[in-house]
Amino acid sequence: MPADSTKLFNEWLVTDGVRAAGMPALIVGVAQNLNAIGFDLIRITVMVRTLHPEIESIRFGWTIEHTEIPPIGQPFFLKKRIRQVGDQNVEEISFSHGAFARSAPYQVSPYKRLELGENEVHSPIKDTGNEFPILDDIRLGGGTDYFLFALPQIGDVGHRISFATRRPAGFSAEQLRFLRDAANQLAVAIELQVNRLITENLLAVYLGLLPAQKVLSGTIKPGDVEQISAAIWFSDLRGFTELSQVTESRDLIESLNTYFETISNPIIENGGEILKYIGDAVLAIFPVENQDALAAAKRAFRAAQTANEAVRLMNEKRKLANSAAIHHGIALHIGDVQYGNIGANRRLDFTVIGPAVNKASRVESLCKETGYDLLMSGDFAAYISGAKEIGEYQLKGIAQPEKIFCVHERTAP
Image (cartoon, rainbow, N blue to C red; front, side, top):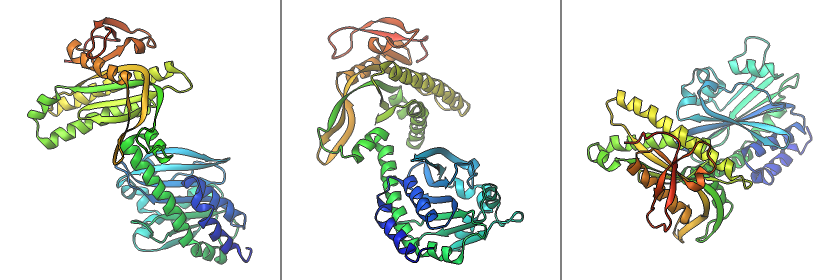
């Protein structure tokens, strides 16, 4: 290796490395820089702890040629996605709280050794009789040597990084010393990326993904709004006031959270953004992209149908548990809204306002009156094949009567 390689690599970490656009970009940069000085790496993994109500840790994995090398604890992960950085791919796998440590593969993994107090694990890869099962998978990808170590703790928790090479002789003593010497700079660069990830995650959890991205990009002042077209979802529980009077507080909160989880998944999975939980009501939007209002309406409609089926299944389980059924109504409308920051300097809300939002709310109020669990405005129904008009109604605060549509028989109580 060049004599100044450690210095040059550390300088890259504290300049370009810390400015990398996300953890995947940082890992690809580390791989490229190390391979340029002869490491011949085929795999890098970084395991980080995060702050998220659903996700405890995230494993980022790069391979020189993207292959499905199973991560430790694979059957237990929450979700997996591929991040593209130039012509390189980085696999991002999220683990729920406690799932990784409880998994059977973890118990016979090099990570377990770190948990038991060791600071690093260096294990040359053999044709047979490897110390850890994961090494057999790496060997299939051409690996000859494996090195895992704990990075110096900078934040509340420490992170782990591993390297695998295909050099015939494995890692040299000089290369291992190089990686140990770079540990502090690696820890700083990774911690900065983790802090950014935590910020993005928390904003997304509390604001929604699109609002979080806008806030992080600088949309932070009162009045920072834009007009967008969107399909609008407004839903509300039926009989929640009565239910709250006969249900213990803890059970009531559990029921409410179960309901929100049940209907939120279809919204998010169909490209919607949940903007507000208003007591027992939900406001969400499905933005119109590329002026394709039909696609936005179809996504919103699919989410509503999926949510209603999920609520039906949820109530079957509640019946078996001798719990009261939970009923709701969903209204769908489409139109232009003002989208952005509303409020005061010290307390902002990222939401949508405008006549279209008001109309969605008014249509939803008809669900209880008419007995339908899904109603649509005339503007929205124009995009839905099979929509049937149920009548013309005078909506509160709206001058002209509105034709209201459904797609099935009454199901709400």
